Image (tube, rainbow, N blue to C red; front, side):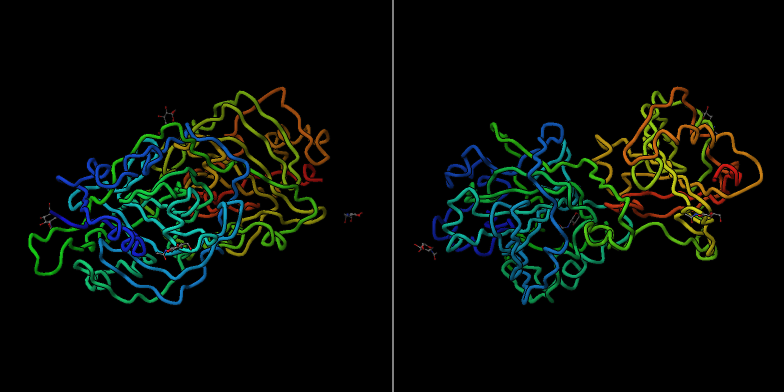
Length: 508
Ligand SMILES: *[C@@H]1O[C@H](CO)[C@@H](O)[C@H](O)[C@H]1NC(C)=O
Ligand SMILES: *[C@@H]1O[C@H](CO)[C@@H](O)[C@H](O)[C@H]1NC(C)=O
Ligand SMILES: *[C@@H]1O[C@H](CO)[C@@H](O)[C@H](O)[C@H]1NC(C)=O
Ligand SMILES: *[C@@H]1O[C@H](CO)[C@@H](O)[C@H](O)[C@H]1NC(C)=O
């Protein structure tokens, strides 16, 4: 019988073997269905993993966001271990009552993944979907003297779980730090250990880790202690198919046949039994910005200081032609929304749309994107330049942003923080000689919303297509962010090359 194909806590191994010499595995006569007979707590009612249903989870306004800065400390030492294998970190401590109910010190992290030839191996499911793998970072509540005591308390451990998803193209270079083939070869067989050059866990996290699910559960391996405050993040860590093939770790010692690859080391999901899964609010929390300039955003909005921010100065000579990108279909934009509300949001003029059109053409956008608002950024009084993007060092008078969300997400608030959750079409506005009657339709009621937060509902609605340039074929595409706080890097940007024009009289 396979003795250990699990990946579990190094620190818990001692406790486990002290309590019981019973063997367990992920298949056969000592598989998960039998764990309860040798380890009583495995048969209890608050067990993990579970199938998380987003629609069944409740918003808990007290839950805050984890910050990347919680995970940037580099541990003094790290070690790779095949026990299954666990990666041990000497850790940082998270002390933020908005995200965890105590001070939790990191102990170790480990992976669960699919069997050789299978594509699914995560422990938790999200909306009935199982991922390729799952990374667990295990923390202990520092108020308990040791792990044996912590295991007897419902808040004894905190585990952060990240799904691991396989997309066949590029390797995840951050994960290569420990997943590279030569690294794993060093621990190919049972009980092998290898020193790992320490790294900060923040380097392997996905871009968004503010969306998560919280519930009370257990260790997913015997002794199945119901001591875990679970956090399961929505956005997966992405790895490549090539990295999966590198996972050549064996269940037994080198000369102990049959030596099978480790994999499929996940416990089947268990019922909630009345437990509640909660999540932080993902509603947009824009603050009034009337007196706050861009230079101050970094102080209060973490994401505004990250790497893939917008806007940018697009240098045409440095762009790369992508044959897969097609022309936007003008007909899409002729639909008239059900309701349009003009709003002074404090930093731009915004129109909220109800019943907006959806762009569903994969030649132009990577999903189905529904329009929900558009807004205008423009030059300050007596200034001639106010666009956000620049092209080849040139700034235009204004820029219109038409904002869409990916309808695969349940709400705008949810899409907002997801990679490719939003798609924004950017249209430059230049000063020309003729009156633009379309812009007049938009701007005529502007006197009614001079004050911050004032709004009005348009009595006659109009289509968005009238604000697009003639040329819907030449545009620039890149991955970026919202251009205002909270600056989430969730935007598929399209910036049209051709501007639309308004007259100087319309500006003054
Ligand atoms: C993994 O699976 C492939 C295809 O099913 C098989 O050819 C290969 O021998 C397996 N590797 C091991 C080490 O079992
Ligand atoms: C853990 O702490 C408790 C209480 O201080 C003590 O009784 C127990 O022996 C300790 N266990 C271990 C394994 O150190
Ligand atoms: C544009 O969209 C309309 C309406 O969906 C469709 O009838 C038409 O065939 C599309 N045109 C092209 C060129 O795809
Ligand atoms: C804008 O320019 C006009 C004409 O030069 C001037 O009278 C006015 O005071 C200026 N406004 C601001 C806010 O600078």
